[in-house]
Length: 142
Picture 1 (cartoon, rainbow, N blue to C red):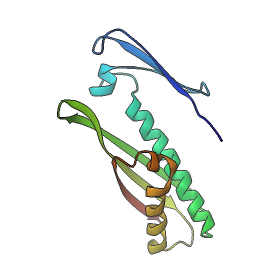
Picture 2: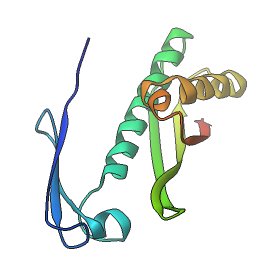
Picture 3: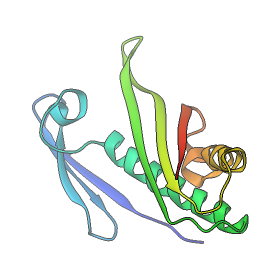
């Protein structure tokens, strides 16, 4: 069993305070605040980190599935967009849009689409976030 760790520290009130997010490896340490989370302020936010984690997990899942099918990918690039909005007075993550493109020599569109969709629902991060609608746009590049 592997356990990963992240942490956050916050000081001050919700709107005027500030915080720091850190990943367990120490490779990412970034400030966050009200503006960086709910406006267009400088800093990171939990949703941005969720998006990066989801894009990474999804790309690895697609790679694994392509390899198992006998089509090792040359390149997979995924962008994840996490939407957070006000719903009934509460900030809620309402959706995640995955946008992936891949270079996979010899792969046909139909088989590629099936693998891309299976990874959308089957990667560990997608499964953990299953309460949120996750959409997918997948393109097989020449």
